[in-house]
Length: 172
Picture (cartoon, rainbow, N blue to C red):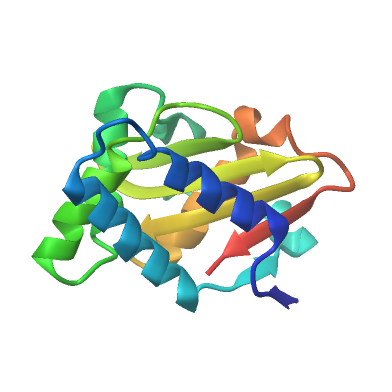
């Protein structure tokens, strides 16, 4: 089932936009926000099927290879990975400027997946009420992306916030 913009997606987007609502934001971070907002027009949201939520772990990502970005260096890595979703160097630079402004706070958590010591996947997990959103996914290919989603759903920090009646949305 596809949803245009569930409430939890709006919550995540507002959280991201607030990251640059500071006294003196850089013009680059504001431009990055505009570029990010423009990209949302093409996104859709699917409710994860039960088989996705209970998928077998993959060899592509072990649980110990998936980290919450809870300090600045990982946030920078997250921003650099996210920037790969844009095509021009200028857009990539503005997205990095926008995303490196993130301060760790609820309801969102940034995650990175590593292979061979290098970041190869990333995404945001947002929690609110009985909903979860896995969004802003980037990986080298679809197989690695799917393995990263599976590993995210297996992380204790994610799993503990899921309830039996939780709706889990996947941003595409």
